[in-house]
Image (cartoon, rainbow, N blue to C red; front, side, top):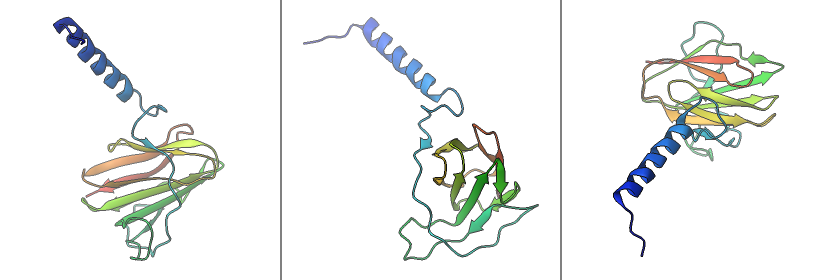
Length: 158
């Protein structure tokens, strides 16, 4: 039978806190638990209205019931080729509480990051990567790639 002394319990708790801090430290690290593996390409859906202050990424409304993926309120799709963002960088406005899926395809390996929500996805070259979340925080949030440091768009949640 193994009995821990109070000093051993304190040391174990301290080690757990330090390990947790190391895992959370550093934006864009490969060991970031919020970075998801790429998902399958989204189902095409009909466009919806998106408030814009310039060119915006493609946004779509809730997919049909026949779609194999979970329903989302806003689908935002971006393609990166030769360090060019398509559609060009702009703002996408969504309502607070909406379900949002951001899908990005890059011609080079990179990492997608949604600031403020601390979400990300690996972007293997030529393979779409997605993040899906409920827009429960209001404000202006930058969506970018880490390796190439490209701003894809600004997400406005109202």
